[in-house]
Amino acid sequence: MTVADLIARDVRSGVFAPGTWLKQIDLESRYGYGRPDVRRALDYLTQKRLVQHVPNRGYHVFMPDSDQTAHILELRVILETAAVDSIVSYATPPAVERIRERARQFDDMILHGTILDQYEANLAFHRELLCLCPNPELLNLVTELRGRTSSALAGQWSTRARVEQSSREHHAMVDALAARDIPRLKDIIAQHIRQPQRK
Amino acid sequence: MTVADLIARDVRSGVFAPGTWLKQIDLESRYGYGRPDVRRALDYLTQKRLVQHVPNRGYHVFMPDSDQTAHILELRVILETAAVDSIVSYATPPAVERIRERARQFDDMILHGTILDQYEANLAFHRELLCLCPNPELLNLVTELRGRTSSALAGQWSTRARVEQSSREHHAMVDALAARDIPRLKDIIAQHIRQPQRK
DNA sequence: GTGCATCATATTGGTACCAATTTTGGAAAA
DNA sequence: TTTTCCAAAATTGGTACCAATATGATGCAC
Image (cartoon, rainbow over all chains, first blue to last red):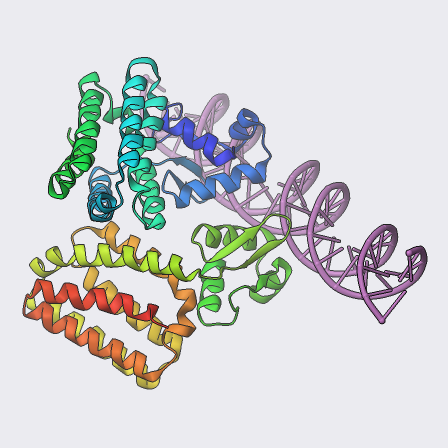
């Protein structure tokens, strides 16, 4: 696991709050890596829009602009709904069953997992769904876009009602997929993505 | 202008052919920058998928996989056609005229510019078109995606017939926009993007 | 003559160090 | 007591150097 992944995980899990200054010496002592590795990781995360770089000041955790995240969520709506057509056409019964299994695993994590486990399980569900699309670059791109908005993760799944709503939507998506109901699946996905945006 | 931009320009203009090994000492003498700057730039371009990194071997210009570029072009079709609806609704007459002016500037570059000038003029046209979309992140994303496929630039606009075809499509796009013909504009854009893929 | 092992060379990648800039704490003056 | 200025400490960012690894050539054995 690279330094960038470690930092990203700590940002997502809330160890480093948005706006926190990430001092290089702290990071290298915390993770046990050298200065160049830390700087590479910070540059990497800067390009991924997870941290921001101020010359001669340092790097701090990116504070998500609310309408910027809204715009990124709209991009995800565009891409993930556009993928639905091919997803449905490639949805064999065993594939549908695999996705349903992922939805169940997400439910498990709601009961027995940390917020990070829930995040990972949610990611796995959507990955399983999108990898039916014959365009692997789409999965890559959506994963990247997801990474840009998830620093507001603490606020998204704050309430129990919220994660249970997500779970229900996952199952509704599987059902729509099994029924090959393209418009309904698109609707659910669009709602599912836009939902965390509500305040 | 950063080192990464300089390298990227030289890659696009064909100074560094696909597959070429980019030796750090050569780069730092060529551009007059230090080793760390060169490495930062190479890491940056690696994440941008313009170069590839092989541990303990170095960095070489990315060789575009043909179906990978096809997949990325499909993503651009999805995003740029999705943007058409809002583009048309925000297309005031002066905005349309600005875009038409960009199309004319592209024509000028066909006659009097280098291939890099043509590339820039083409970029400016599409930027002018997409910045009508109220989602600025869409323009960013499309620009990034465009950067991933343009290393095959030499092959795309190799023939004069090809660039003149592009020019005609630009003007057709402006006409469709002025007529507020959404489906036609989407069709032209989709064809325009997919075209360079032909062999 | 050909294939393989070994060695020299060149390039990468990491480490230690130093300069430049910013911030913070304190002291002095209003 | 508050504000301003100065100095010291800390952090960033760049430079030079050195070790590790891969490559290519040369020599040797078969």
